[in-house]
Image (tube, rainbow, N blue to C red; front, side, top):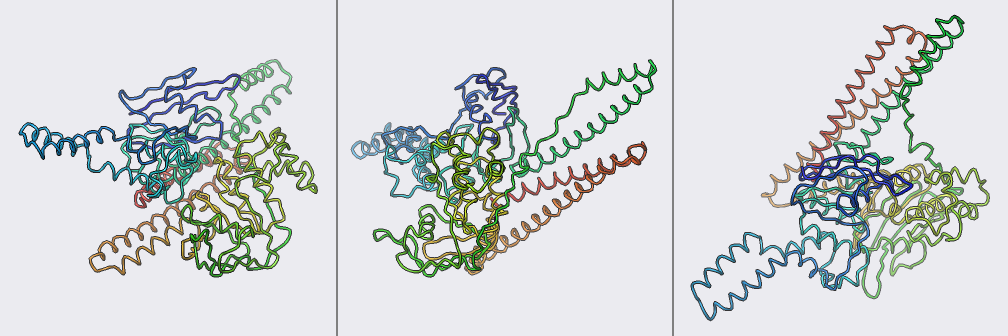
Length: 632
């Protein structure tokens, strides 16, 4: 065990941020730390780092263990250039290498035996420390994090905040501390860099605790998930998807317990009324005894449904034609530099399309061309009949800083009543007094939600969303996914959030320098299609590659079987849950709750179904881990 946290409490009067946080972390273990914004995740990191003291509780860190910390906003000052900064990690090796070069020069003039012995000993030590590979390791990390070779010499002081964060992350990864605390490490990374980071951290020898809104990243990397909710920690021994399933399962059990307790309370209250109604002292004493027992009963709170009433059904006022957008030989260049050329594609009414591609390839530029802000260098972009585009570009320039959230929506859509606006804002997680907050005082995520609300309420029937999940926490992303899935217009969006793409997209367009490649399905289908493409390439390779290709094909077939089995398990769990709900309804009927044997029989059946579900969930979790290992 590398880290143990027990009973942590922390308050910033009058608010109690952490009430009871406990967990332990084994060596090499990767844990996701999740919770809504303001739940206390970063506070917990600061307590583990020793930058803040808890009010109560203890933190135990293995003796001599080194911690590396990546803050969400990098405060990084250095006069070095990018590659120079990362090379500082290997300063002892660089000094050793310089000493070897000096000794080599000396040996050209003086082949003294003592000098040769010292050179041999230092060379051996240099090799043991993998000294010949440190420069390539630095470049490998820089490439993985999306830095091109011509950026290696950029001065750090000239970099953007996102670039500085990537430099800081690269340096941390090369330092290889025993425990990494990473606060939003996936910000500022494109999909290719995210995939590289997943692979790097999967094989990382140290332990990691990761705060991230990237659910796909957490799914593929983490084997443990801890949620902080209302200041209390709950640990789930699985990845993010397992946490979602297990939490929902736990919530159903708690709801069942709540409903059973409410039934028992009503039964006791009826008995008390009956006893009091008899008027005799002995019956009144019995009633009083039961009342005392009822008062002492620890009441179960009804589990809250976070996603209740989040669904916003939006239908554009004007329906577009069947073909929404056509691109023919679309080419774009700036100052002689060509971003892309010869793009042919089509988007049809009602489609939800994810546009993906490497950073800098021109995705946002293409959006601006569709909106008419830029003209193609060559080719044609043609919108269909009655197409009305709406554009979200992350800047939130369409918001008035001095207005409240409520007035921002009302002034834009005066035909809506105040109750209607409040209901709509509730669907975007603005509830109660939140609607009176001024735009200038909102966080980046809150502004993003207001902007998304405005654009979805507009007259557009073709939404273009550029990185809509940036700045949004997980709950906000789930709300947006729900609303976009029910949106009846056409959607084209850019996103690095692979989980979001999976939830929303029914088609993927991959932008490459010389073509637009369409893939039917969500991001996982896109990956599967890409694997098939690679298999086809392997099949066309020389004969010596055939064995490797056959293995890949067998692995792909096995993977499909495992995924099919997971779907069957999910269906079985859902069927059992449906039967449980039906049995619960029966238990409320007089002919069942008045008969002890009949009631017991129903209870036994519920226990059987719940045991089946637990076994199914364990098998589902095991298959999930096998699939993750196979896909890595």
